[in-house]
Every structure is written in C-alpha cells, then in structure tokens.
Length: 326
Length: 252
Image (cartoon, rainbow over all chains, first blue to last red; front, top):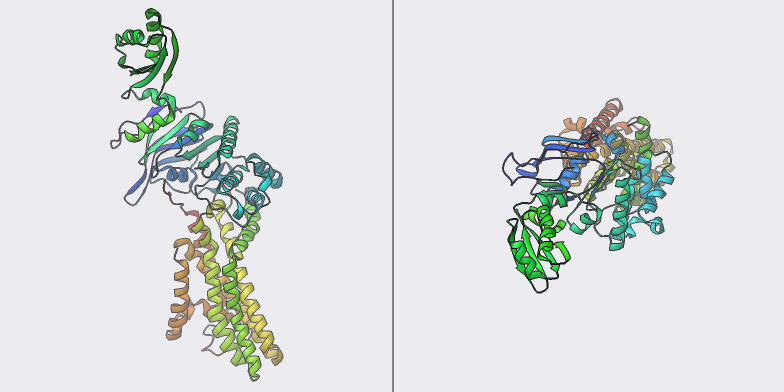
C-alpha cells in the first residue's frame, strides 16, 4: 500500500487511487460508497490491501464498522466495487472459508463454553479435525485455563479472545477485526498484538479497526484513516507524515552549543523557525530529509557536537490528529 | 460451498437454537402456559361428567389450539432469529460458508420442535386425564389434537420466523395476528378460514376425529396442502431474506 493523503474534501476529488502490487490484492475497494437514506456512511473510498496488518483508524462515526461490514459481505456498496480475493463478498457465503470476522458487538452465546463456541465455529466451517483446530485456536489466544467455562462467566477481554479464536480457527486468509482489543488488559493486548503480527508474517491479510492509536502503532505501521466516511489517508503513517508538507516538522536537538548551532541553522531556507529552550533547541522545517542532511553539515562547520536529534511529531497520534482536524 | 457442509450444519445450529430458546424465564412462562389445559383437565376429571366432545372442543380446541399453540409458537418462532438479531450473535451463523436455507431449516426445526414438544405434551397429559378412560373415541380425539399441534407448530413457527427476519416487532405482530386475525376476525368472517393456521390445524385434526363444520371449517384434504404451502413459501421467503440480510454499520 503506497502512502497517500487524500486532498481536502471536495466532491469527486478525494478518491485515492488503489495501489498496485505484484499480485492481485486480497482486499480491494474502488470508489466504494454506502449510504443509508440521506446519511452517507462511507463515501467514495478506494484502497487495496495485501498480506500484512493494517490499522483502520477513525473517530466514532467515521464509517469504520460500515467499511468492515462491506468487506465481510454484510453490506452491499451503494456505489463502487468491493472485492475480497477477487470477488464480491456480498451474498456469497462461500467467501467465509477465507474470511474470519470479529464483530464489534460483544455478545457471544453465553451458554456455550469457550471451547464449545470455537468448536461450533470449526464445525460450521466443515474442518476435518475440528477438535484439534479448536484447541489450537484456544491456545493461540491464551484461553486454555478458561476454555471449559461458560462464556457467560467470562470477562469482556476473555469474550474478545474467544471471538478471535472463533474467527481464526479455520486459518482464514483474511481476518477482519472490529475493535478487537476492547476490554483486554495490557498483557492480553500485547499477546493479541503478537498473534496478529505472527499471522501477518505468515501471509495473512489483517485489517483491524481501532480508535486507540497506541494499539495501531504497536501492531504495525500501515494505516487507513477514515474521517467522516472518507478515506483521509492510507499507507505507512511515517510516510504519510512526510507527505504532510503544509505542516512543518518539529525537531528537538541537544548539542554541545545550542546557541551556535541555532545561528548556523537559521541561515538555511529549509528552516522555518528556531527556538532556544532551557537545554535544547527546537527547530521547525518543512522537509525532514533535507533537514537531516543539513544538520550534519551545519553542526560540523559550526564545530558543535550533536547529542540527540528527535523528530517530536512523527507519531501516529500526530498524523491522526492532523488528518482529523484538516 | 458444498451441500454436505450445509446439511452437516443443520444439527449444530439446531443445538444452539434449542439452548438459546430454553432461557429460564421463557421456559417457566411456557411451562405455566402448557399447564393450563392440564389444570382444566383435572377440573373436568374432578367434575366427573365430561363427554369426549365437550372436553375436546372446550379445552383441547378452545384453549390448546386457539391459545396455547399460537402463543408458544409466537414466543419460540420470533425468538429463534429475533434473539440472535437482537444481540448480534446472528453474525456467527451468517459468517460461515453454509447455505442460508440450512440456517432457516435448523431454526424451523428447533423452534417448531420445541413448540410441538410442549403443546403435544400438554394435549397428551390432558387427554390421558380425561379422555383415556372414555374409550376409543377419547383416544381418537387425543390423536387428533396431537396431530393439530404438530401441524400448527410447524406452520405457525415458519410464519413467525419470516416475520422476525423483517421486523424487530415480530412478537407484537405475531400476537396481533393470533388475537385479532385468528381470534376475532376468523369467527366473524368464516371466509378467511383459508388464511388461518388455526383452521389448518383443526382441519388436520378432523382427519382423526370428526368435528362439526362450524368447529373445523376446512376438510383435511384442504387443510394439509394449505399448511404445506404456507411452510414451503415461508421457508423460501426466509431463505431469500437471510441471503439479503444486512448488518447495520454501527456507531463507527
């Protein structure tokens, strides 16, 4: 997926061309839209995904769940095209052999034990050895100790893990997860993130929605950002940050002589502003790569030793904040 | 998607449906309802002068077929899909590579089976208390109303399954159908017997035990085919609807 930022919202101008890969994408949306009466939930969204983990970010009401339900075949696009493994998932139950879905809603059959539930999924998938696959899935989500307890007695985090086990028991090519980390404690979250990473490394295509930026940042770097039904950006969030040229990068520097270094940097047109703070220098520049080359030469010619150079706003939070507020 | 996988899914979905339907409150309520004909039977038995006809018409038909059967059927029939749609667990069935007809058939078998079990048990116990001592006529009346309960269970539940796939107010609509259409209008307008599941049920009962034309307005040869048509049409519509079932977008 190539990093892209959609232009500022304007009718018919915000679509992002699908990236082209060496093979057919596992998931592809072309100008896909979904509306309910006069309410537009997803508007003219295009992207494609191959193997790996991608975070689907957006504030509440951005259209994340609608998008996932379209991919899972539970909503037909009102316009455009949605394909999963090269075909439309809508009204085609056979596609679920290759899709695992973890819905946002918490409810799982409360009267089944965790193992019963996963086994139920395995048998409906027609797995030849449902028992072994079920126990393996339970083990992968770390529910071994609770697998014989009724799901009705589970905590929210345990229910989430049971849902994930049920979704991956048939080893699907594509895993769609809607807010999968909800209710998990930090240890469980880390374990689940590891699991998703392992599946991605094994060639699976994983798309998960979240509004918690830390989660997305920890699992991977590829993101899709939905804002008000539109795809605001897609790709590696660090590359997206680099494309945000209308917002200068802020870099903090610690050196052996901040004042002398400030004077040297101010002479370069790539630098917008330099601010001397208590024991560091804060620099704003439009072009991070140019600045990286500049700082090396400037410090050398000024005879200043660099102790630390940190870009303070390259985090996913910064990218997300920028895209949502734009 | 193979036929084998879809067929194999039916018993699995039936099992889950049964466990879902047998929630404690619903079960207690329905057991109490099923006990009503039995209690009335005890009253008849204690009074000691019941005829087969009086008991069959005033308890098995008026209470069993007219009230108990449709109420049990509406509660099970609308809950089979309704509860799963309400709490969102329907997604765990739909996100599977199985034909939609298999899910519909499983829900029908589960809900109609429970309805039939409860209503047949009620008729059977009631019949054993009052009708068994009254000879072959009593046994024939019991068989007749057992058949009515079985046919009525399948027919009512298949219709209520369909309604629950179109609206979240299926229970209300089902009760309105039972009370207004079948309870009031069918008595006032005899012509609508062809559109009354109650009449299909007693029409089938008529094959085992003779009723008057006022009590059973349809002959068995009319009632049974109509009942079959209703079930088949309901299964087709339910499958069609489930294939087009959409999950809402949610808050995100």
